[in-house]
Image 1 (cartoon, rainbow, N blue to C red):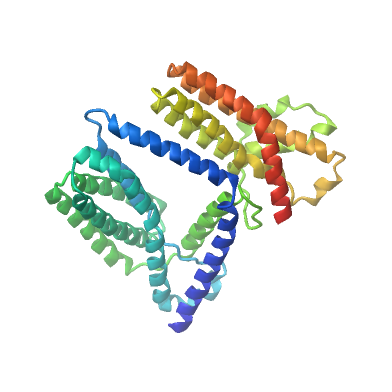
Image 2: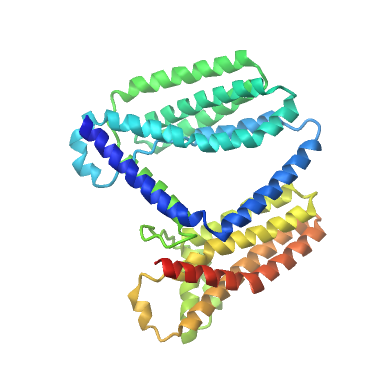
Length: 408
């Protein structure tokens, strides 16, 4: 047992050390300053909106859904490695203390997003309910219980190899969490208690079934790799991450875009960067997701034109920063050093692609603002984005690239 707990202690120390080493760069960047200003502006708008909150606004349902997504997303970090499939598999029967430590660590660390949401939604609750803090405190206790239940249920589901089983579990937990939290917010404790009984029955049922199932090593290894890569992609925005695995998709339906690139020697990296952008989930996916998410937000805040303009510029800036690692996408290929292309042409090709992608994004977001009759927001967003893309972003990205080169 001591040797098993020693393995966990070593793993958690390695995990904390690696995370801390990347956070040192992530929390020391200009992007953090921009995020602080953005959050300060969002908080100011949120305070103003609460004073003018529309009559009949479904505050309880909004809070229930937000809390529910956070709770349903619970998971257990086992820190299992690929080599464990060989070396720890014979010790599976003695791994219980290891998994207990993993469960406690996961539950504790995942309380931070829940606490942040509870803090952010507290003003909405007090404004909508008119209740004292004691009522909200009772809700917080229930949220903690629900967090434990969701984490335990997710752990139980890892004993099932069927993907459809885990998807069904996620949907059922999302619905149960939403209903239970809504009843708790509305102080309908009788209905909430009935939902809690259903949750308890589900946990007991699956705990009994799990006794007949074995630990799915491959599933946990895949989950750990996926979560690590997610963190590495985030850290890669601030510094080079050697452990980052590139993901690519063919996307043949977008090949027509590459036909606009002239077949010339000096355009070598223009084609390579274009192909990498289209095929990589790390770049193409980021642009699509950010454009879609902030496009919806801009459409929602259609009555606040200057907020829409600020969101357009902010989205373009964030996207530009997240596309910066594309410059070193081929740095692991020594063959590129033999290309008869000057370094200045490579840099020019990168910024050319960056200008095109960000310009298209700015036009799409501005079109959303224009569709909502936000003419001032549309024009201000376009002007601010143009200034950012063609004047500010290039020297800023150059400084980031030089900083990353020194670190590596």
